[in-house]
Amino acid sequence: MKTLETLIKLVGVKLDERRRFLQRKLSAEQELKDAQAALEKQVAEERAAAASLEDASFAYGAYAAQAAKKQKELDAAIARAGKAVDAARDHLAEAFEEQKRYEITLDRRRLAEAQEQAQQERKELDELGLERHRRRPKP
Image 1 (cartoon, one colour):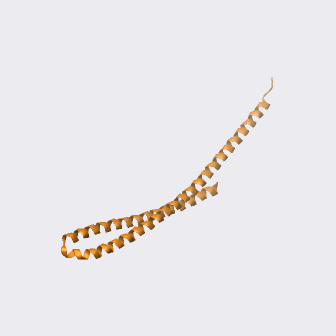
Image 2: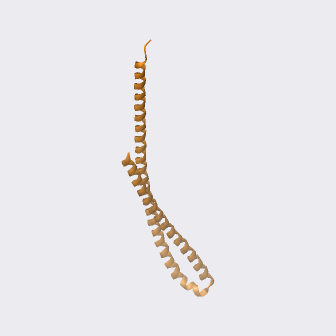
Image 3: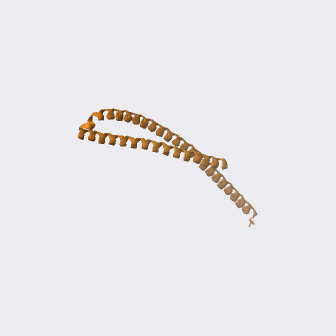
């Protein structure tokens, strides 16, 4: 049973590492989404500025094209980050399942051991009862 306890601890460490890895991937994905939101806000501000200033309206077309390109890049990066998050979640689930298998096995072994010990105690008590019965004086 000691080996199972050790395995459970080792898998627990692996589980913690995978949780941290998932958290890093989620943070990276959120940073990309924040950058995308900031870009959308900036484009809206530039559009409003270009509409209000005649001199700035000619440059807005080039800016909008560049912003659209940046938006596509962010969309692709967010999609890649989403796939990385999904993969990290799958790895975390695998580690959790592995730990759960070991814990269930350990629980079953402990239960079997307790049942075996209880059976041994009943056997010993039965033997004591029989011995006591044999030693009892006969009337």
